[in-house]
Each structure stands twice: as C-alpha cells, then as structure tokens.
Image (tube, rainbow, N blue to C red; front, side):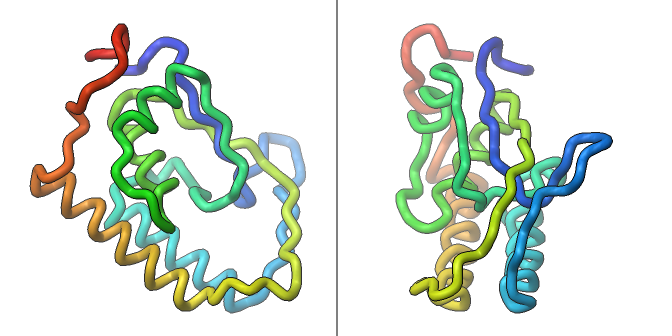
Length: 148
C-alpha cells in the first residue's frame, strides 16, 4: 500500500503534462539509442515499473519520509544507485511521480557513454540478483515510525 506523506518526484526528459509541450531534449542519436536501451534494461532487468520513463535525469526531490525509506534501504553506491532508489520506492509503497524538465545536452562531456552504459547495466543486473536471491532485503531497519 501507499505510505502516507512519502513521495519521490523525478525530473523527466520523457514526459509532459496533458495539454503541454514535451520536455525539451537535445541529444545525439547515439545517446538517444543508449537511453532507449537503458530504459528497457531498467524496466525488464531492474524491476522498475513501466510508469517511470526517466530514472537518469539528475533532478530528484524526496519528502523526508521518502528519503528516510529509500536511502535507509539503499545498497548501491555506484552508477545505478538512482535506479535502485526508484525500485525501493516502488516496492515500499512510496509514490513516484515524474515532472517534465527542459534539458539540453552540453557538448564536450567527459563521460564515456558506452563505458557508463556497461557499468550501469552490470550494477542493475547485480542489484536485481541480490534482491531476488535474498542477499539484499527490503525488510531492513527502517527509522522508527516507518515500519510496515
């Protein structure tokens, strides 16, 4: 069930409210392709619902309750930590909403898209395996008053 007062708002380059223009995104074809493939991987391997379209936009806002739940149960501290945060939120009944943002890719990024994609794909597969196998659990120690 939903947890009262727990909300995560994700900035999204892929959503728009009704009767509004979509978020502005200027990206290379290669980045668009990698983004699409990554989104499929996040949903199919990572276990994030189809309702979430963009886990990687840097804009995220948490209510205090949501932050305490999500970060209190987080295990990943590398590339795909935010995918795990969204997974935890959804699994723990925290409302996840997307808010459209205007985004422009800045030329000259030092990030290797291919290397980052491989690292993140590995982290997501590792994350899901650890939850499915029981190595990681969402029954961890929650702060007082947040227990199920």
